[in-house]
Image (cartoon, rainbow, N blue to C red; front, side):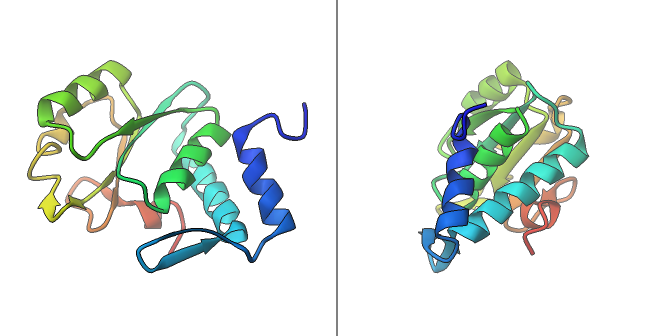
Length: 154
Protein backbone atom coordinates (compact mmCIF):
# COMPACT_ATOMS: atom_id res chain seq x y z
CA UNK A 1 0.00 0.00 0.00
CA UNK A 2 1.29 3.46 -0.87
CA UNK A 3 2.29 5.70 2.03
CA UNK A 4 -0.58 8.13 1.42
CA UNK A 5 -3.23 5.92 -0.08
CA UNK A 6 -5.96 6.79 2.42
CA UNK A 7 -7.12 10.21 3.61
CA UNK A 8 -6.30 9.62 7.28
CA UNK A 9 -2.66 8.93 6.34
CA UNK A 10 -2.23 12.66 5.71
CA UNK A 11 -3.42 13.52 9.23
CA UNK A 12 -1.00 10.94 10.64
CA UNK A 13 1.83 12.43 8.55
CA UNK A 14 1.23 15.95 9.89
CA UNK A 15 0.86 14.63 13.43
CA UNK A 16 4.37 13.16 13.07
CA UNK A 17 5.93 16.16 11.30
CA UNK A 18 4.20 19.05 13.10
CA UNK A 19 2.59 17.61 16.25
CA UNK A 20 2.28 20.96 18.06
CA UNK A 21 1.11 22.98 15.05
CA UNK A 22 -2.49 24.11 15.15
CA UNK A 23 -4.62 21.97 12.88
CA UNK A 24 -8.04 23.52 13.44
CA UNK A 25 -10.13 25.60 15.80
CA UNK A 26 -13.79 26.11 16.51
CA UNK A 27 -14.99 28.78 18.86
CA UNK A 28 -12.36 28.94 21.56
CA UNK A 29 -11.33 25.29 21.17
CA UNK A 30 -8.06 24.72 19.34
CA UNK A 31 -6.62 21.39 18.23
CA UNK A 32 -3.05 20.52 17.24
CA UNK A 33 -2.20 17.89 14.66
CA UNK A 34 -1.15 15.46 17.42
CA UNK A 35 -4.41 16.04 19.32
CA UNK A 36 -6.39 15.59 16.13
CA UNK A 37 -4.68 12.29 15.26
CA UNK A 38 -5.27 10.99 18.82
CA UNK A 39 -8.94 12.01 18.66
CA UNK A 40 -9.37 10.21 15.33
CA UNK A 41 -7.70 7.07 16.73
CA UNK A 42 -9.78 7.09 19.94
CA UNK A 43 -12.99 7.57 17.99
CA UNK A 44 -12.09 4.83 15.50
CA UNK A 45 -11.34 2.42 18.38
CA UNK A 46 -14.68 3.29 20.02
CA UNK A 47 -16.48 2.59 16.72
CA UNK A 48 -14.68 -0.77 16.45
CA UNK A 49 -15.55 -1.64 20.06
CA UNK A 50 -19.19 -0.91 19.21
CA UNK A 51 -18.93 -3.44 16.38
CA UNK A 52 -18.84 -1.04 13.43
CA UNK A 53 -17.44 -2.91 10.44
CA UNK A 54 -16.33 -2.16 6.91
CA UNK A 55 -19.29 -0.99 4.87
CA UNK A 56 -21.42 0.10 7.85
CA UNK A 57 -22.68 3.67 7.85
CA UNK A 58 -21.99 6.42 10.38
CA UNK A 59 -24.09 9.56 10.02
CA UNK A 60 -23.22 12.97 11.44
CA UNK A 61 -25.58 15.90 11.80
CA UNK A 62 -23.47 18.96 12.46
CA UNK A 63 -22.05 22.09 10.98
CA UNK A 64 -18.28 22.41 10.56
CA UNK A 65 -16.70 22.16 14.02
CA UNK A 66 -13.76 20.23 15.53
CA UNK A 67 -15.69 16.96 15.87
CA UNK A 68 -16.68 17.02 12.19
CA UNK A 69 -13.34 15.93 10.62
CA UNK A 70 -12.62 13.66 13.62
CA UNK A 71 -15.77 11.60 12.98
CA UNK A 72 -15.24 11.71 9.21
CA UNK A 73 -11.69 10.32 9.40
CA UNK A 74 -12.51 7.83 12.18
CA UNK A 75 -15.33 6.38 10.06
CA UNK A 76 -12.97 6.21 7.08
CA UNK A 77 -10.28 4.58 9.21
CA UNK A 78 -12.55 1.67 10.20
CA UNK A 79 -13.89 1.28 6.66
CA UNK A 80 -17.33 2.71 7.38
CA UNK A 81 -19.17 5.07 5.06
CA UNK A 82 -19.77 8.57 6.43
CA UNK A 83 -23.01 10.39 5.79
CA UNK A 84 -23.18 14.13 6.41
CA UNK A 85 -26.53 15.55 7.49
CA UNK A 86 -27.46 19.17 7.92
CA UNK A 87 -28.97 20.40 11.19
CA UNK A 88 -31.16 22.55 8.93
CA UNK A 89 -33.00 19.48 7.58
CA UNK A 90 -36.69 19.16 8.36
CA UNK A 91 -37.86 16.02 10.14
CA UNK A 92 -39.13 14.63 6.80
CA UNK A 93 -35.80 15.29 5.05
CA UNK A 94 -33.85 13.78 7.93
CA UNK A 95 -36.10 10.71 8.06
CA UNK A 96 -35.71 10.18 4.30
CA UNK A 97 -31.89 10.37 4.51
CA UNK A 98 -31.67 8.10 7.55
CA UNK A 99 -34.14 5.54 6.21
CA UNK A 100 -32.27 5.43 2.90
CA UNK A 101 -28.77 5.05 4.38
CA UNK A 102 -29.73 3.09 7.53
CA UNK A 103 -26.69 4.10 9.59
CA UNK A 104 -25.76 2.12 12.69
CA UNK A 105 -24.47 5.24 14.43
CA UNK A 106 -25.62 8.86 14.43
CA UNK A 107 -23.39 11.59 15.84
CA UNK A 108 -25.37 14.79 16.27
CA UNK A 109 -25.44 18.17 17.88
CA UNK A 110 -27.91 18.66 20.72
CA UNK A 111 -28.59 22.26 19.71
CA UNK A 112 -28.27 24.28 16.55
CA UNK A 113 -28.78 28.05 16.44
CA UNK A 114 -30.40 27.92 19.88
CA UNK A 115 -32.94 25.24 18.92
CA UNK A 116 -33.04 21.83 20.61
CA UNK A 117 -32.72 19.34 17.73
CA UNK A 118 -34.34 16.63 19.86
CA UNK A 119 -37.50 18.77 20.09
CA UNK A 120 -37.39 19.34 16.32
CA UNK A 121 -36.09 17.08 13.54
CA UNK A 122 -34.76 14.43 15.97
CA UNK A 123 -37.97 14.22 18.02
CA UNK A 124 -38.77 10.67 16.88
CA UNK A 125 -35.22 9.41 16.38
CA UNK A 126 -35.90 6.44 18.68
CA UNK A 127 -38.21 5.03 16.00
CA UNK A 128 -35.21 4.27 13.77
CA UNK A 129 -34.65 0.62 14.71
CA UNK A 130 -31.44 0.43 12.65
CA UNK A 131 -29.71 3.08 14.83
CA UNK A 132 -27.72 1.23 17.46
CA UNK A 133 -26.16 4.32 18.99
CA UNK A 134 -26.99 8.02 19.02
CA UNK A 135 -24.03 10.10 20.16
CA UNK A 136 -24.66 13.71 21.13
CA UNK A 137 -22.32 16.69 21.12
CA UNK A 138 -23.71 18.52 24.13
CA UNK A 139 -26.15 17.31 26.77
CA UNK A 140 -27.38 13.83 25.89
CA UNK A 141 -31.11 13.18 26.29
CA UNK A 142 -32.37 9.83 27.62
CA UNK A 143 -31.50 6.93 25.34
CA UNK A 144 -28.43 8.64 23.89
CA UNK A 145 -24.79 9.02 24.94
CA UNK A 146 -22.41 11.96 25.01
CA UNK A 147 -20.04 11.72 22.02
CA UNK A 148 -16.97 12.89 23.95
CA UNK A 149 -17.45 10.24 26.66
CA UNK A 150 -18.05 7.49 24.07
CA UNK A 151 -14.92 8.42 22.16
CA UNK A 152 -12.76 8.94 25.26
CA UNK A 153 -12.11 12.60 24.54
CA UNK A 154 -12.79 13.76 28.11
